[in-house]
Image 1 (cartoon, rainbow, N blue to C red):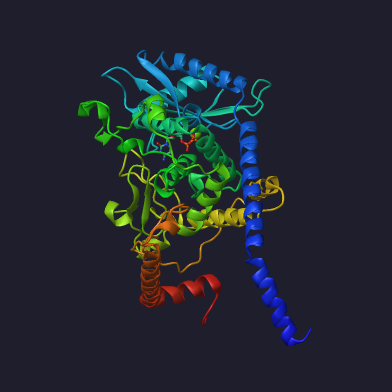
Image 2 (tube, rainbow, N blue to C red; image 1 turned 180 degrees about the vertical axis):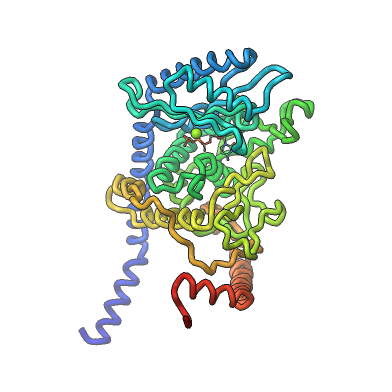
Length: 462
Ligand code: CTP
Ligand code: MG
């Protein structure tokens, strides 16, 4: 082929690929993939829901434990919270139980944990591990597998954790507003995060509770039009005294009349669960401001500085236990970062997984089920991916995109082009600042850097 014919050939190929027919074809393939993926997601999560027998066994266990606890504290009630109570339970998930004592004179939680631990060890076949000195003292219990319970059972019992009961109710209300889309997305993400080994706060990644909050944040604050309303910002139908809306100094108000809400509020967002999931992965791999932002389901995107949660660019950055890499505000305990256990390597691994998921979905294999299988392919390596050493956390939130992900109205906005230009300019300035900040940081810490290279990599002179 002569150079001229080669050019002609490429021109033809390029013009053909952007012709209206090929665009239409691509659109159709995408629509087909998205529809099929939504169906696969429903079918997939339905098989993973707990069976009626499992729920019945769990309820029996709860009642048995309640009877035993009443031998120590007669005025007590044992209530389920977490996934068993909020509609986001998978087959064989752990049970979270909270003991409430309706009497003024009660023992401290740590003493109750020790006493209950002794009692359960004496009276039951559970393996018992009391943790009286944890931030929230709990007794951990487990039962070995048996014919009725092929995978055994695991549960945690805590005391007086009334905020957890309330946040469970809040999550349940969100699940009830749009069960098909919200529950499918959350259940899928729980399976995905477990299979990809990024669902373990003890190892530096994120709890299931954290992932659920990310989904709700995305559906309330990122999607435009929103898929869910902000229940915490909806006013009550009649004035309510402060004592009823506050618990231990925390505002726990939210609109919980979901039947009424479903009559009066309808989301204008009609995207399918697959479209939402694709956008979710894209947003958290590319757009969320990890360095400076806090995801709050109560108030949207907040700045770390406004909460005093910024990372210190100091000696502490070498501390593996550092907090606030990823910030998710608890809906009621607003000074509590739900993702405080996520380490630098943990966040690096989680973001890597969001990116991987985005890539898998972008390839749009011929059958959606293949994408699903690839997404949930078990990660063999239990370890976290090590983040690069020199990653200087920024103190600033970079300029925000002038529109939310997936906004249908984006291109119709007359200010869109101007905003896009301004956004690109601000982003360039922000990037320049980031790079010069990193160079300044490296120079300032040059002696530590050289020391680190010599010790760990054997670099330099001996
Ligand atoms: N919780 C909390 N603060 C956290 C973690 C958990 O208040 N940092 C409470 C929440 O009420 C949450 C419950 O503990 O609903 C259970 O948390 P978790 O086990 O992470 O979520 P589940 O939905 O129960 O998920 P799984 O089925 O994986 O156990
Ligand atoms: Mg749980």
